[in-house]
Image (cartoon, rainbow, N blue to C red; front, top):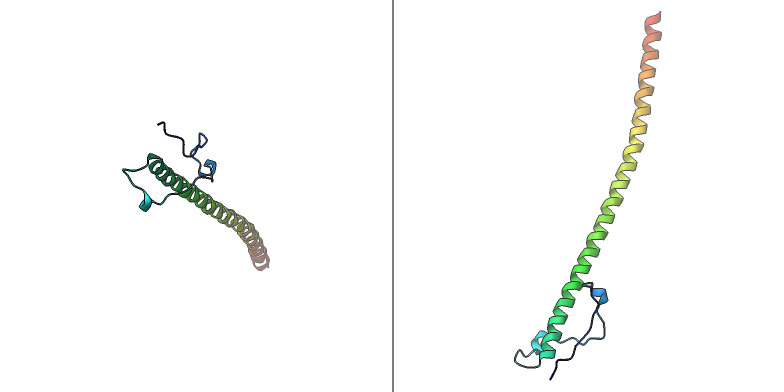
Length: 107
């Protein structure tokens, strides 16, 4: 008797490519000396859950990286605003000091 395929999948390891019509078999119900199809299905389910958890971890890492990049952009904008403000204050203070010294010591 030739084994029949339990579930087919595309040539990709992405969890989204696996078919959703397959029946799941808990490991507690698996009999190692019994049906090969059940054993293959249990292995398939374990692999599918591994791929799904890896995909979720990648998505979470991408979200964290996006938040980090948003904070970097906000810090760069605040840094530029403060640079302009303090540059104007420094140049204005220097000019005011120079004028004050010139007026005081001119007479």
